[in-house]
Length: 245
Image (cartoon, rainbow, N blue to C red; front, side):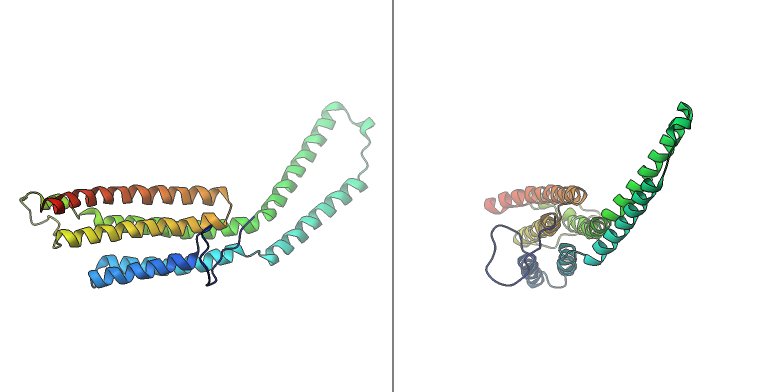
């Protein structure tokens, strides 16, 4: 049900994402940001993304492994429940000829309630492992969603249109102490970070075939793609100014 992730160094696999390659890309992006914009908030956000990526690698490996202790305990509990149920059915003697129809319906209803309760108990233990893994994955995906919004906050006030025409700024207007080339690089770094956040989320979908996790990953990918689209609109406007100059 869960395909193990490949994290060993060696030839690159072109069929699946590899967490090591994603982490290497984030490390290079962090160096590029710090070299271009020393001590910037965007560089610190990328550092946080790097720590999240390394933690995600450990979480994904943890989810890819079968948890034998949980499986053994689950099998023992389910086996005991079934043994008790079978023993009770074999030892039960019901004189149906003495029951009236209304009494038979009451006995049947009580039996069905017991079966539903036993079925719910079995289902709870049978899905215990996948629910633990799902909860861990959803917590990490929530962190990635928060990082995506933080990246969006960093580019929110970087408006390239102020290069086209002079504006009357107020004391509360956001300051933009970047050249057009620097702003282009800044926006491009934000776009790359959003893309890498989507790739980290995709690692969970790649290694955990759970519909709840898959839906959460799809939402993250849609969010990062939408935010990156806004950034690329700014980059296109900025490119027009650079070409004009």
